[in-house]
Length: 331
Length: 247
Ligand SMILES: Nc1ncnc2c1ncn2[C@@H]1O[C@H](COP(=O)(O)OP(=O)(O)OP(=O)(O)O)[C@@H](O)[C@H]1O
Ligand SMILES: [Mg+2]
Image 1 (cartoon, chains in turn brown, red):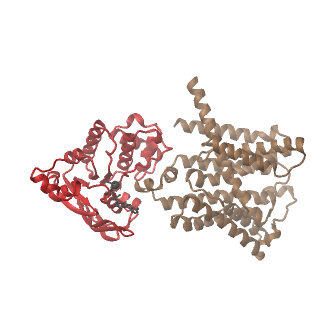
Image 2 (cartoon, rainbow over the protein chains, first blue to last red; image 1 turned 90 degrees about the vertical axis):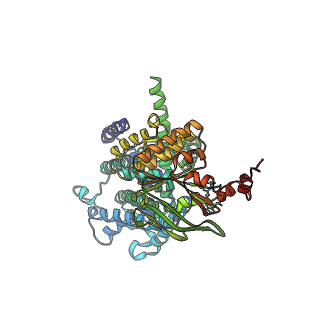
Image 3 (cartoon, rainbow over the protein chains, first blue to last red; image 1 turned 180 degrees about the vertical axis):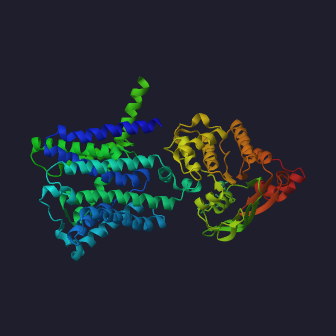
């Protein structure tokens, strides 16, 4: 149970630091930077549940993000929903898509690269669908949530303008996603999920209903990722087929936990921080050295990913743990 | 307690198991022996739900379990181990065994406690916090046994848990298996180590080319001409009987 007290320690420090950060940081640029970092850590955690803990590598997690985000926008723009009332439906959308993809893949025993390909295909199919379903999504031009300009209605409309509201929302969803990962690590469900990742036949032999556990995992993963989509929709008040279902989000979601440490509670968060900081630093460095070069941060992402995959099989969290253990054993 | 009737499995043109009848009564240790490729592991796979028999049926604890999934069969109290061990490599010994314990126990802390006590029953108490990937062959075989045992089975199917072990490790595991049986668990084991088969089993089946060619007590089996032929080749029994085997 020593492991758990370490978690609560890190968790408490993080929450306090996150809540205090706006007092220390005046620049809206850096608050925005933190907000997006946390937001992507949540998406990464969604992927991590299924990919990191369950070993089912999805290349199309945008299908959950996009569905959550689209539902959040469409329910408000087309059906006049209150944003709060839209949230459960957006999350439910992620669960339904999860159940659907999961059933088709797991029922027919698709594993490994086959599973990766089918998720990729799903995301692509939804992108095409969202583009052509003009009447619902307004097609390729994208769909907007009406802007609220009355600051007293910020909470009611879940639109926070330029203040720190979005940042605090990002903190809240990050906290929720960390607590879910903590529960995974301390529950029968999580133990069975990890066993499936390690060896599905062995797990099945000793009583793990692999199909059921994988279905639960993909639904939970879909729910968290769709929740991330809700946040995105409320922050940018806009959605189009490429943002929703394009490959960029799918890739970002798997890169964060892979770099940070798959199947760890803090992996997605650490990975997101590392990559965003790296991206920002390289953007500035490139600006100083060679002028504006859009896309340079993506190249740096790629290089970091290759290096970390080659050198750190357990990601940054694995590295931190190793260093920490060495310190402890030296003391 | 276990009754397989006429189970058959074909892989393409190859009949791996042909019309095999197998039974195990409560409290017995039953051995399943035979040359390499005889179909022993395939039998286990059919009994435990990993392969669906092409023909025949499997009854366990009074119910037809043919075609049930392995996890459902485990829930009914029959569990197999794997000849090619399958440790959860990145997990500790304790966590490995706890997955088995979760078959009956929902609570995480209780399952981890149960894992520690099961580890004691197979002599792994001192390795609880070792990562499974760091275990020796003997350790991995024990882990297979411990994980299966943690599911609280009524019947254990052990596939060559002694292969690759040295003599002292074998006598160690033989003692553990006896203790498990004395604890009320029925056991069917596949084994090439004859010394273990002779000392452990109440009954044995001999499988050759997918068919059961003999059944009886270990002593009856050892003198059965058909069995000797299966192991030593055609005509061997006759030569043995006349004292004519030299090479
Ligand atoms: N999945 C499979 N696909 C095709 N053939 C198979 C498969 N599994 C087993 N076989 C074949 O079926 C036959 C029986 O194999 P099985 O593993 O049951 O033998 P065994 O008695 O356990 O042998 P050993 O003592 O070597 O473990 C062998 O000829 C094997 O090559
Ligand atoms: Mg075999």
